[in-house]
Image (cartoon, rainbow, N blue to C red; front, side, top):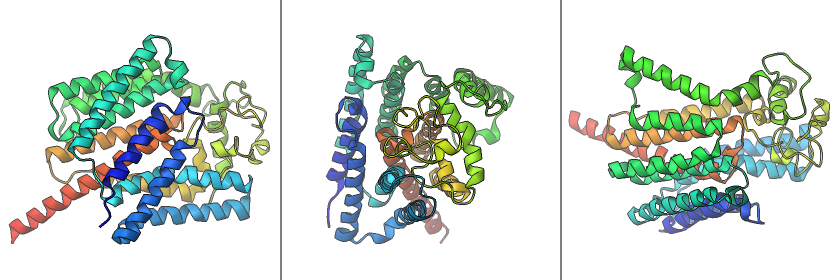
Length: 411
């Protein structure tokens, strides 16, 4: 029997440090791709050494779907170079490899590893706070938005490592870790912060079915608070940009907003299977090879999207779904519906409820960040997808044990 736990933990640690925390300081910008590739090789080692092929049905399905889109992009639409298409293929599949590696492999962090991660999150949060207060934050982390992303990541890891026997002290530490992200001054982080407080201290599965008027007022106030802190981005990307206003001529500072505005048109023109990999709103569509789709929709002259100078081409996630057409969008939505069904606890067991709350926070984090960022495809997204894989498997085990207990009790 091949033991993979320590290797997996080492890769998780590397992703956290090299793929997220020090990523902007490194000359090597493909660390998250390399570590994800090592995770894929670890899955192969598990299949060959432990003969666990049946566990990886989901991963096989995702790889098959992505290979289909790669061939479709190479031989049918071909809006970019073969190199860009294959590069985008691997970028798009990264978070799914991470999820299914954690979900299918059966590895788990033991008590000593969780203790190490808890302490690491505290230490790195303190270091980040000191760098921010000393004025070196942007020199180290490149942009203030990363304060919120990294703080959220540490918060989620700490939460996962303490959910089984969490103390009052742990909750205070978690909130302090998360509060460091307030220095990001990003409305999307403020929105997540409000949601995190709500879920951490009040929300439970099924609570909405029995809420009273006073509690509904609380929910409405929370929603209004999230809307208020996020209004700047909502207005920027969806209203003043012209997506809902009908405005066609936009200032060249609206690079990311333009990707939203043009995406319905691109989807309409490539409705069934999409425009193909490396064609729209991805790093590969601008930095690896320049997509021939951009001139067709008159966005190749927008500042931030121009050939040879397109720093904002991958600064949002949702518009890139048009690359996969309505078929790919339906499959993507189905994946998250499947996730929700898996994380929903069937019994009111404390551990299952806490895992459910962490999973909900991960999904909220990815959703918010995907509006004006591509965290889902970066090191931070890969890290939380590993956590999500653990959670889905853990809740499934709890549900199966409880079902067996009930069946044995009825006999």
